[in-house]
Image (cartoon, rainbow, N blue to C red):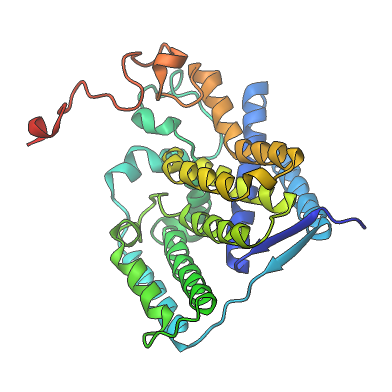
Length: 336
């Protein structure tokens, strides 16, 4: 059987996260088809369709792609760091998440199915409910499986995965540059994850901000590999798909994706075939397509409410593109 190409993944836990995101995305895609067609969302038939597509896709991809999955080199430091992070997450999750944004829109976005909130429940969740919600839906599945308190453990698992990935990256970098550190790389990685408050404070919450970080680190590792050898077309498409998933998790991840795309084009753009270009563009857009289409259908702005000077949705003011500063300080002096 002819293979499509090779794909390199740092470890099997990253692949598991991507698989979970793809499964939830399929749930969203089928629900959107039902929403647009006026059919019941979340029906048994629609879920069987998702299971069939997902299972068929797994079989096909496992046969048609050569997967090179890195192994985690467990040692005492890596085990200890992982245990501490997971232990802290277990303690933190005992206390229920009562964050403002969680009640304002995260829990609303976790609910399966699409609802035009300009027709039903007007004003619920403010403009945030129109952001890309793949991360919320994944956390919603975690809440359904583990209950309200421990549903937040998904963020703890991602926190530990980030620690493992950084350890892998530092170990590979040290080997590449023939650096021998007195302090184990796992300690540096542990310090990196616990001193980054944007990650630490998300433990025990339903915030989605950290879910894209493993994909971001994976994209960086693939970018590093692209500097050393020519990436295959399949690898380029996989890399673009990771970027698309990052955007589907949270729209504002664009500030991470754009620099990555620019760097990747600088490193490997000239060596990419036209098929790889087309495949990468499709792979980057498909994860977002569900939410772009839903937003456009309901508001006439695919990224509502942003850049409404371009799309002219009747549901938001046309005067501002990214930030509505009508009720806030206009500069730092006014902020003080």
